[in-house]
Image (cartoon, rainbow, N blue to C red; front, side):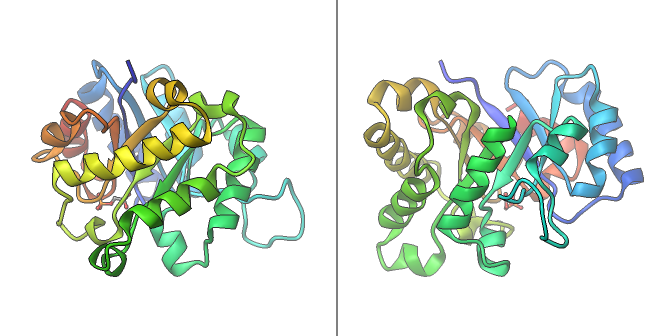
Length: 249
Ligand code: PGA
């Protein structure tokens, strides 16, 4: 019932020339995908990515967005600026932003509101660190992050939001959560959404991805789990062939 969504998170990789080449290779490989296909690129690649994907089934996303409409925020980019470029999605609250750039539950929520107000579709990330997992706090952490991210966000917006569950210890490490563990934690997130909104909303309208070393080898096993509706793919999204294999899980 929930349409799967596979999104690439390029992080700080690819120049404009590299973007054009990668998208060109990717288009024929994913054209028959049964899921939604998104590539999230650095700001400087967005215009080229939008142009290169015109008329294809690939959608483009940014990797962050500021919460203010405009103003004295040197170096930041607003939601309106992204919409003007033809960008449709935006990653919010990625663990690298939380770890290295001072992202908090409050700023995640502020960015969510700004993105939705401008018509962007957030891919909002939650996930526990290794220390939190080892001290048995996984459920508590993802629940707290989910509740905070959705503060004052209307039920009508649920179709426009994707949640990505990304255990921090699995990102870029080659360590994947087992399909069962990922499924269990995503169930905790879905139950949280059921409490925040309604059980049917959470079941029918909330898409939750897994992210963290997802690749061509483990994608089909992860995607076979009932709670997992897609993937947020870092490293494996940088090669057309690898990404297409995940997309065509
Ligand atoms: P990875 O990154 O696939 O390289 O682990 C995932 C992410 O950070 O979104």
